[in-house]
Structures are given as structure tokens and as C-alpha cells.
Amino acid sequence: MSHGYYQLPNGRVASIDGDCSFPPLADALTDPNGLIAIGGDLSLPRLLAAYRQGIFPWFSDGEPILWWSPNPRMVLFPDELKVSGSLTKTLKKQKFEVRFNSAFREVITACSSTLRCGQDGTWITQDIIDAYCALHAAGFALSAEAWLNGKLVGGCYGVKIGNMFYGESMFHHVTDASKIAFVSLIEYLKQQSVSMIDCQMKTAHLASFGAREISRELFIRILNELCNDGIYNPAKTF
Image 1 (cartoon, rainbow, N blue to C red):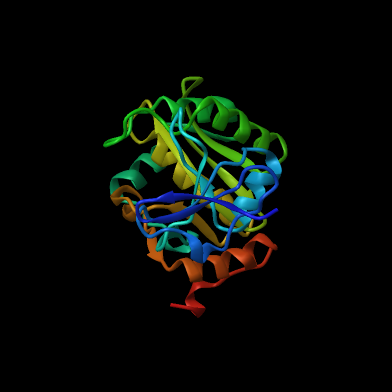
Image 2 (image 1 turned 90 degrees about the horizontal axis):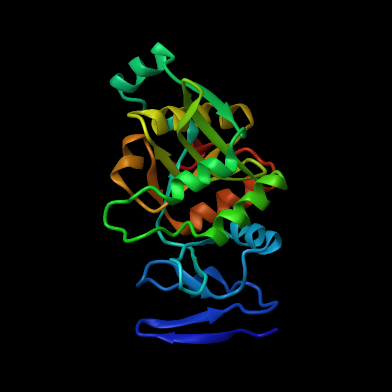
């Protein structure tokens, strides 16, 4: 099935309604950075196909589904993780109990209600919650959780395909809870041979953990290797 297109002020964007596949990444707009397609659905096959091509959904309630592949791409190589001195002290205190995959729906629901600086509302709609819970049930999404006195107080979640992990969102109700969950998740993923973590867009918070931008071309090259259970050594490229 051939693509239809939406004409936007800065270029045209493919419509992927029905059985249409995603267009080539070279077709992504530069403004807004990375918008590549509109429409489609959040089915398991569609989401897996998107992630395998370096594409993710990001849209607000009431909007059509918007698909993105920005350039450059913010990533974290697990061996480059930076942990501040204060967070290291908190880790040593073992204040929180860290669990994995024991409360996935609770984590993503809590992320959906977390207010973000500069954002009105949330992109984690009920449709997103249900779709990613389906990914979790199929073994492709996981959560890391920080618990305190038997209560879930922080966590993060994302999608894992092969040796590639795509970080999605995090939340906290207690200081450092999401950071503890995130750092614990990185160590957990390293044990599973995950070599790169997609952080999507640049933020100062992610940069403080050692995340950095790489070109979309390099990102896709590494992604293709890792999604097929390969191992990537960033020292060979940088």
C-alpha cells in the first residue's frame, strides 16, 4: 500500500493508516525535528516495527498518533554511566528496595500523572498505557521500581528488543527514588548484554548521567546490530 501524505508548513509527512509501512528515515522532518509519520495504531506489531527502525510514538491526547526519529539522537552507553557523589551515598545506604517488573502498569500510570517542565498534560495517554502493558505482557517492556516501606515511590520503564533498550519515562514521589531505579536498571541491563540505551531527546537530566548525542545514522547502525542480539563496543567508533 502506498503512502498518503499530510502537507505541513515545513514539509510533507507520511500517513501510515491501514497497512502502510513507515517511510525511509531520510523523509523525517528537521522542523519539528524527527517527525516522520502520522496515523496508524499502537498494536504490538506496529510498535515493534517502529522501535526496530528507530521510531517511537509521541503525541498528546486528542491528537493523531505522531511518530518520531530525531537527529541527532540522545543515547547512553551503559559503561559511560555517571553517578554523582551524593547519589552514590544514597545507593550505599540502601534506603530503597529495588524491584523489576513487579508493578509495570503502576509505574507507567504514575509516569503519566507526573508534571513535566514546559509540558501541558501528558503524552502517556490511556491508549499508550494499554499498548505498553501489552508490550510488557509479550516480554518486550520492563520496569524498574523503587519501593520504600512497601510503597512504590519511584520508577522507570522502557522497551527491550534484543540487546537494545529504549528508555521511555520515569517518576518519583520521594527524592532520588527515580534515580535509584534508573541506575539499578542500567546495571540490570548490562547483565543482559544491553549495549546502548535510547534516551530520545537531549535533556540536562540525562546528560548528567553521561548520556550524549550521536547522529541518527550511527544510532541506526548500532540499533540494527543490537536488535539482532549483537554486541556493540562504542570504543571502536569514538
